Image (cartoon, rainbow, N blue to C red):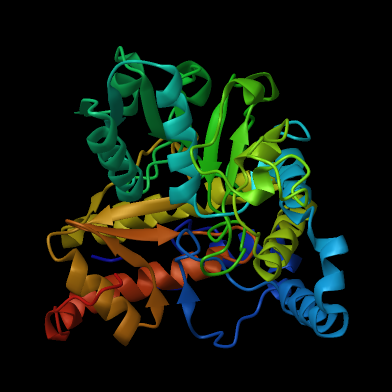
Length: 409
């Protein structure tokens, strides 16, 4: 028998308990700093695309106005944006030093840059785990084909890091399960980390953990917007040793002395290539500022509280309906999303979106990811979402949806 819905405050399964947690939430006010044009919709997909900060909308309007009034003269203000945003990320999100992070390009392009640079230095195989994010594996497949290297796929990040290889690529948080890899234990000079599912949601301390190379995106927990520029990190001590495989004029020493051959600048700037997207970088900067103001420790504490509530409600409500938990139970090993598994995960996910006004996402073959973004997700959101989920499955509504898949899942 299901617990009564909306039980009293002392019932950990009751909605009143979730509301009390929200009343005591030190990050509660941040919710009002994001655009939410449909309060009835519960958004649990911030691990794919974060909400739009109100400050970003204003900043973009101001930057567009500057473009209109100043035209090419605006470049005196814009030209150092990749380094400025990189330093902001370094200080408030990544645990790095000034001059170790540059913002721009996509995660895929930045991963290619760093991996190719490592392979230029070292002989041997390329290794990653089978559960790593697909674009990471695809980049490595391409590099293996181009260089004639062996690409070795193993079962876990721990296995990958233990392989004798020229290059190892690992994700800090697994995109499907949400499991956190032990960065400090697995880091080495030939290991490149993907921070896309961790930065902005859990503490990252690249310098303290001995990380030398990393990449990541900004459109998830950092709320930089769809297709927002990514970033790459190279430890200061490693920068002079590595050369980007993509040479462009923004990585050139004295870039406007155009009659000379390519000569990369010193420092992190040598990993730039083409002209940076100024409007998009302005959006990233505002997203990082909101995260910095909230503080990553407070964000992490709320993330744990939200995902713990998902686990508790899963066990009480969803497990009897045939669901399984696809994420670690230990909150210290879990990022800011929880995967619940079910043989009919895809139609259930579609039913949630189309019939229950809850937005998660699906990852094959059988996982529904419930992503909580602590800056704007509430405990009541989590309670209501799982209540709607159990209700639609109990009623069999998922059996009524069109199970065909579009390009975006």
